[in-house]
Length: 93
Image (tube, rainbow, N blue to C red; front, side, top):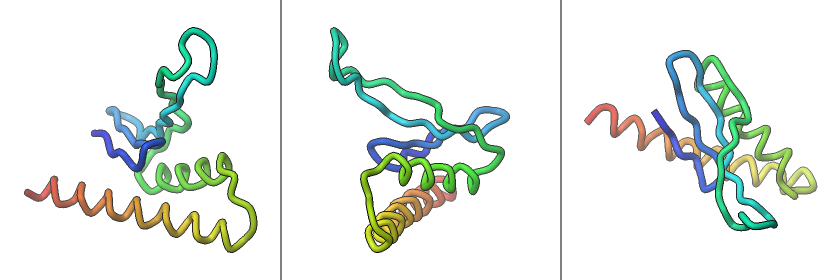
């Protein structure tokens, strides 16, 4: 299963793990602009993977100050809830 959280992160599963995957782009050289994926975390359940995504996304952002961090996390939470609701809808249909 693949759950795309946004343009940068998605959560994938295999038979043993829940994997947080980050989409990156080559910045320079012959392959400039080419996209590739990096597994940034392996988790035993979805809840841990979502927490990992929030932590990783925040640490790699340029957000500064408590108010900005709070707004950033709030937006991430809304995106994740919307994706999970869509996933729940697709599974139950």
